[in-house]
Length: 253
Image (cartoon, rainbow, N blue to C red; front, top):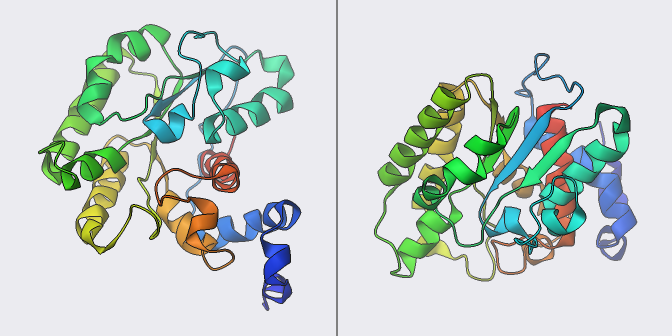
């Protein structure tokens, strides 16, 4: 089928309305023929959802405000956008949604605060996006961890979580970068191994995998990398909106 969006002018592609219109096409192309079904992930009354990660999830949230469902506590990124969609679309369910992302975090820093920022919240659905700092801080000399460190720490974190919260469903988000800003060829091929580890971990724990890198690889066919994430790491409002749409499509709730 001929892609109708290829007929849209560049100026229109960069507009908000057009980007909203192409989101479904980007998601479909990113999933390809491998979109998993998650029939057992059902929202029921009082379900708790927790978004965890680094600055991409943090997105400037008010860390003094830890109340579920409040905009200040969500920040201004994909977690807020996805949560807003769920809360507005399902008011009768009284969902409780939290964001506990913290800028700069690597996996071992999640682990250091995990009891307070995860276990005590007892989420039914736990979404984790982590990994870009595990490589980035190594490249700039601030950290000596490796892909193996990332994978071992991540597995230990999920084993610990499963032991305390055996019914919690994991959503593992793929670390991603766009080739602009701070991201150059020095990131590769090592960064691809972090992505592979995240996918492997999702499979190991029967989690839902959200292939954000595949999504952005499709997105740059419609608008340049800097449009989605100016520094190659932190998404713009357009990038965050696309992530929220993709996250919802991935978990199918």
